[in-house]
Every structure is written in C-alpha cells, then in structure tokens.
Length: 600
Image (cartoon, rainbow, N blue to C red; front, side, top):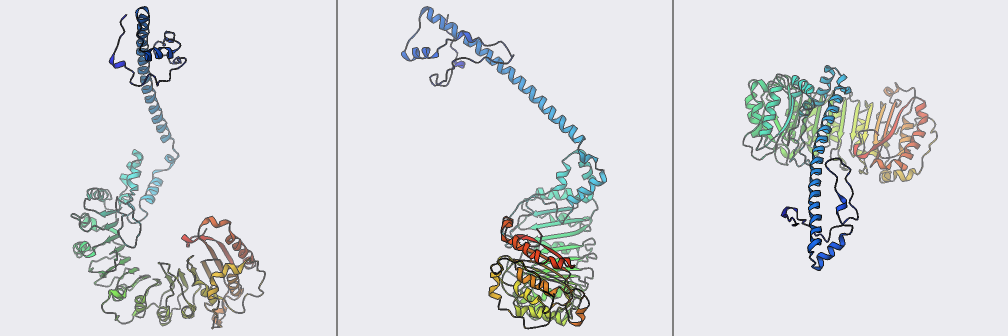
C-alpha cells in the first residue's frame, strides 16, 4: 500500500518536541463519528527512535505503517468535520445569546421604573440637566484655555442634549420637541471649525425662538472663518440672553458684533461677560452704544467699555483688570447698582492717575478682592451710603497685610449705618488696620471670617478685638487640653493689646468662623459676648447678646479625623454647652482646608 504524502498535512512544528499523550481523550460531542483510538501504537517513543536512527521499514512492516497513516488521515478528516460542526454550533449559540440579550433589554426597558414618570416630569428633568448654566453644552475644545491665570488645560466635550436624545426613540422625541433644551451652547473658535459650526447651526435651528445662552472662547492667533457671524443675524441676536465671550483679541473679535447690533440692539440680553484674558498689557477699550433694555449683569475683565449712555437696568457690575478711571466711569453709568465687585483695578493701566469728582454709588453689596493701591484710589472717589453687605477677599490667599484706611475712610464718609454684614475671606489685617474698620462699622450684625490653613497671621487680631470686657457672667468650666500647643502659631501676635476699652461691633449677633483651632480664645470671645436680655442695649454703647456661633475648624485633609483636632473640637463643644442650653445657637464642626466654605 502506497503511503499518501500530502504537502497540506505536514506537521510544521518539531515532532520531537511534541508532548505525546499516553492515551487519547475521547471527544464528548456527538458531532460526527468518534475517533478510532485503537489504531495507534501504545508507545510513540519507539517510532521516534527508529526515525532518529535512519531506519526504513520494508515489506509487511511498511504496509502496517501505511495502514496507520491512512487511518490517521481518516481520523484527521473526522476531526475537521467535528470542528466545522462546532463552529456552526458556536455561531448558532452566539445568535441565540444576542437574541436573548436584546430581548432582556427590550423587556427591561418596557418595565423600567423611569417609564412610570409622566412626560411633564421628564421634561423638567431634561431641562434641569441641559439648562443649568451658560454654555451648558460644551463642544470639543470649548474648555481649552491659554489663559496664564489657569494652569491646567482641559478639552472636555459635554453635550447632554445630544446624549439624552440617543437613549431611546421616546426620549429623542421629547428632546427634539423642546426648544429650551437646545438654547445653551458653548464652543471655541478654531481654524477648522466645521464641527463647531454644524453643531451651532443645529442648536440654533432647534432652539426655534427661545432665548439662547452662549459661551464663546476665542484663543487662536488667526482664524480664517469665525462662527460668530452665524449668531449675528437679527433672528438670532434678538434672542441672546446670557452671553460669555473670552477672547485674546477683544477689539477685532468684538467690533463686528458691536457694529452689527448698534442700531437694533440686543433686546433679550440680561447677562454679558466679556473677558479679554489679561496678560499684563493694556486692556482693550471699546465703545458700546448697543441698546440693551434688559441687561442686568455686566462683567468686564481686561476690557473697558464706554457704555455711551446711562444703563438704569444694570444691577450687578463686576470689574477686573481695568484702570481706576475706567472703573469710575463704568460705575457712574450704572446708577441702580445693587452689587459691585472690584478686582485688581490696576493703576498702571491708566496714563492719568487723577480720578473724577466724588460719585455716589447706590450699590447695596460691595465685594473687594484685595487690591494694590489702585482700588484704594478708586475708593477715595466714590461713596456707598446704601451698602449693607461688604466682602473682602484675597483670591490669591496671600499672607500680606493690606492697608484698610481708604476703605475705612470711604465707609466713614458714606455714613454706612446700613452696613450689617461683613465678610473677611483669606485676608490678613494688622491691629492698626482693623481698628479703623471696626470703629466705623458699629452697625455690623453678621461677621464671617475665613482663614487660610497656611497663613500664619491675620485672624488672631480679629478675635482679640471682638472680646468685650465685663461680659458673660461667671467663666464656667473649660475642658481644654494642650491649649498652649494649639495656639502656638499665634504666639508671634500674642503681644497685641487692645487700646480701646469700647466694645467693637456692639450689634454683632451672628458670628461665622472657618479657622484653625483656638479653643481658649474662642471660649473667651463667646463668653464675653453672651449677654442674655441685652438686645436693646447697643443704643447705649453696650454690646447685644450673641445669638449664633458657627465654627468650622480647618483640616488639611479628612484623614486627620482621628487626630487631636477633633478631640479639641469636642472639648470646645462641651465648654460651650452651657451657652447652648441658655439659648445660643451653636454649630461646631470640621472643614477641609481645600474647601473652607463648606461644612463637614
């Protein structure tokens, strides 16, 4: 019998390296005929030894090997048939698996609890998700900043309207039927802005006649075709409601907008924020004679606008990185201000440091992000007789001590009897600076002090000044531990002696503190201010009784919850238990230093 040699059945690996089994395992499948395992010799090593020795079988022995080879080929064919059968079975099972998964998803979707919600409630949920802020829909690149004030960069796309519309056909029908869900869009001007332009066109079309909110970032050095012209036709510009534009080339980018809308105005605009991305050079100056009959909020950074005429509707004005003169003019154009924010008013941006005559501003809330001398110069030229809330913020969290004299003189000059709320956030003041401030604000009823964890001074003088003499009755029990070690940071300022015997801030009723632990000092402060039955004595120069004491001790991180800081907090809480029982509203807790405004 001839031996059938076929090139396509050659074993390509080393037969000497193959791990020959002692016994073949019979297949458990029913696909095809079983393999005839009895046809193979029990010892493969004997055959391998003959091959290595150069042996060649003749005669009957050769015929026996030929039969073995033929039967092996038959079994190989059977193996291939089995494999083909298994492939068919696998494909069938995969198809059944996909069917069952789709069927389960279908039935689960039909029985999903969210389908119990009426369409009106779904619409409210979608509106909350998609319309919670200006530029809530962020196209790719719209959060990419080259501003030197922002260290990190991000390129986040967030398009909730499109995401929700892909959940199911029913949701998509709801999304497409609500123009309000398409009324907010943010994007960045880019050299290849096909995706941005097509997305903007889609949102403009589907928002119908609904007012629109926009966030536009323009950072490119040269853009061949802007997306802004898509927004300038009257049917779109008349719908502008809340608009934020950040641009490195304020004049060239904003000038076409101003020229186009000067005549017809922006009738629906309620909020406008323009950011020139201050880089240390002179800010952009633009004439803005555009009528905005409903404009309430105006924020300008490194852009000085000539508003051209009085804007009686503006109630909130935020100014940053402009000269004192430009700031003064902007304030004078807004006679009905309720809130005024001044930040980094730069005297170097003005060629003429002389400011106009004194102007009376009717703002009820003043926010000062602690300045250099320029804001001080500006405060010499404005009065705020109606201000009731004053916030002083050091946004850089610097430990420098700032002069408070110009502010104190302005408050004294304005006869700020309406000032009831004072907030000092991350600010360092020396005793000489605090005395004039507290002396000219006797009407303060609410005081907030927020300290920076790494800042080693500034809060201690405030607490010392607030302690009144001859108050609080008997001292009571104090259960403090290692107090000297807690207040070690304040030892450098422990020499402070209050020269005035008069009680400062005599009308103080609510005290909110976010500071490092200072148990002894805080207990003394609360004890001196606890005067039950003295609510009307402030008119006689005596302090009123403290009503609310809110305290959050700063922690660098929440992993310190098991350290002595919480234990000392408990000690202070137990010491103040007496005042709490007598009616004082006491709230004491912990706050991580990276989020000092929140309670933990």
